[in-house]
Image (cartoon, rainbow, N blue to C red; front, top):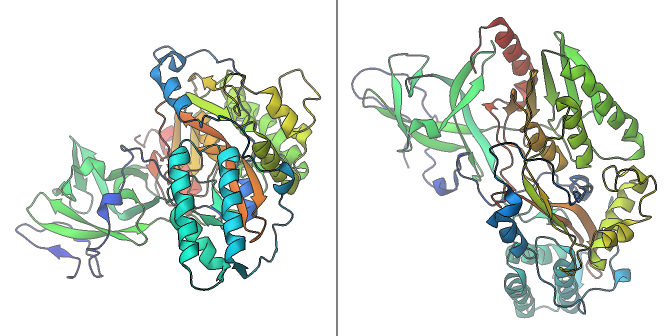
Length: 542
């Protein structure tokens, strides 16, 4: 282990030295660039209630598909649909489904669970857990079905049996569950706040500024020097566009990684020298505020959306969100601040973008909802705990049906696929893009999750839109989350009853959506305003 710094060779070049020991043991194999779409994820909120908030309400889209944008392949006729359907667990029967009356969740906030449980009670809970997962978790087939889950079940039971004592502490029990269920890379999935899925964070060095010219990245400090390699790779794989305090665009070193600490990379310069540079974690402080508000900064409209959850106290703000879109679409430039967005009902995001574009806009995707009794009861538990009014679930019932179904079970039963027991009909959504004359700058951070990420997905279908900040949380694989309590340990299980995937069928949970401009989230609003002003003055570059 040596000092991480620059070794001078020949002509002097810029020197940003690492003033710490080189992180030789950093797992570089886990570093990800946005070119490679990973199939994994990690945790957003530590509190169970926040996990439920993530995305309780995702409509199963109507079986109709909107018109496909010219040039976009018809995904309903491709092999992607068959691939998606193969990821749905095939039910032979429902004999092993838990009794609906046992799927309860009586307490969340402040609830005290037993500190110790007997081995017999732990075995009982394991049996209950895996039956709930089979019939109530939409990702059961995606993550391997019976073969994988039953092997995990046997592993947990074997570990419990190996214990010498007749009981085990609740933390020990949780550790066993996490160890054997760690393959579930799903941002909505948790057991009593313990998230199984790995998360990828943004790492960057914003004080090292580069300009790009002719495919080379020149250091602003010494314009005659350029980078020839980073970690032995093409510099373009590591250079991320950013926005300076003057609104002008520059490049910085950046990467997404599951590393638990800052990472150190080797930078090779055109003068033959090299140095080791630390990339620091880019944090995302939680931004608090109302579900929606509209304000102006230097004359630029800023629409802030923190939640799309239709609880009674937020309904007036959600209506205002949709009403104000007419004002934003007339502006030459506007900012949509989605930082710390905790999810809710996708319908509001879809309608906002529709109002802004004047037409339906959506990314290509596939969706399927479990319609089992287990899924219905778990989803019902979630809506009750959150105090969500079923009549407020916009987009969950057909247009023109003012009353809709009386409860979750009736609604799910009405969407059942007679040819695929336990599932709704597969919804195939064709991608639709739209033109847009308003420069729209969208602020994102690693706290944006679930329906907030759906908002990002819809906005990406518009022209003239840029995303500023860091990668989002990555909580998109499952939705319509259900909740129940393991009967003996009283641990709370949260998992999605709906599965959604894009046309490439890849799972971006843990990685999320990437920004166009890498910017510290705490500076994102300020830099977005400067960027718009620079663009309008013709002084910026994109």
